[in-house]
Image (cartoon, rainbow, N blue to C red; front, side, top):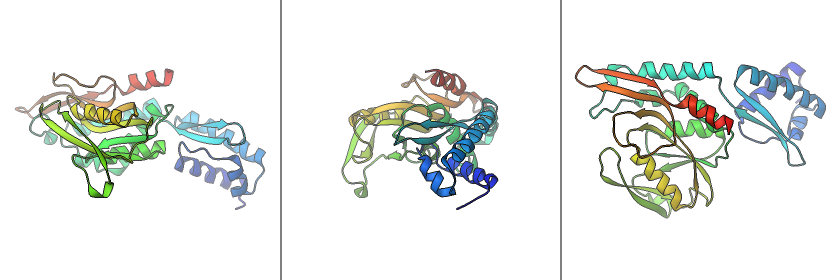
Length: 279
């Protein structure tokens, strides 16, 4: 389609935002807009400058015959802080308190706009790492995992408590729940992860980390690697933590069931993001 430059740049920006982490040959845009390669390169330079100024990501160029351009999403510190504090305000609602120090999260995880923002937050931390798949455990972590995977342009792998006939042969392991100390089982289809894959684990709530520890063990059974761990809420209740290296958006600082009081603070997101971006 032949467009004026203004229309071309709008369409080009939209296309890049809808195809994150996808290497797109310049020839594709030349044909799409029926424009010279030099014109497309100039457009991309302007869009790149604007993306970086707004803190929404960058555009990298890969040279060579098999090269092209790739949009890497990001998020500014100010916007990230606003999203995290919005979540904190929601979490501190006393009506969320459940027995055992857990919080009701279903409405947050069921909010598409908020979940998409969470996906942007986590993907920006791991955007410069090689991620082949995002793993979560059924069921509450699924929307978060899909939001992150959408930003990273990778598939989602869902771990279940038992195998399903529709998934073919599976790998099952036993793990010890960090909070209840009970032995539980998790299973994953053999076709889900390739040997040597880099897997990002995403979960909604981490207390002691037993479930995440189980997913780590399961990844090792596939001879794959853990690329990182991200959790929406981590609990800080004095229980022995079974996982050390992770990224948390919020931290459940204290819970008073008698007074129906919940105190939530920022997790380690900003420290971990800075560390990852400096590596």
